[in-house]
Length: 134
Image (cartoon, rainbow, N blue to C red; front, top):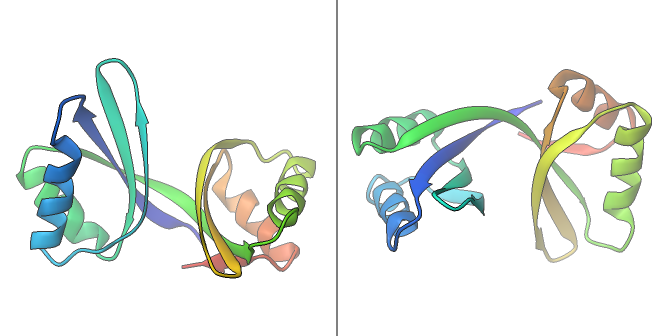
């Protein structure tokens, strides 16, 4: 089952990421995961948050450009080779991964995946008993 990810476009200047975190904090919205990618002129802050619709609203009200994207978040054992096995299954089924990011906590790793085909990706993950996080 896909979840919604926020993509926020930021100018490359000091304090812009902090402005986003302040706005979310002021509004009681918690960030579960994030990733930052940059180019010469701007960055893309990708976030998984507790209250997606509210986050979009408060950020847009502060003139941030926000886009929503469907992604899949999985939980797998935090051991060598576990992610490789999952990625192998996806590759065997022609699932291309546009980007991904991860965070580990103890014996579990959580991975956010942006596949080219979200429906097929979820099917493959379910078929191999991979735990999809809602």
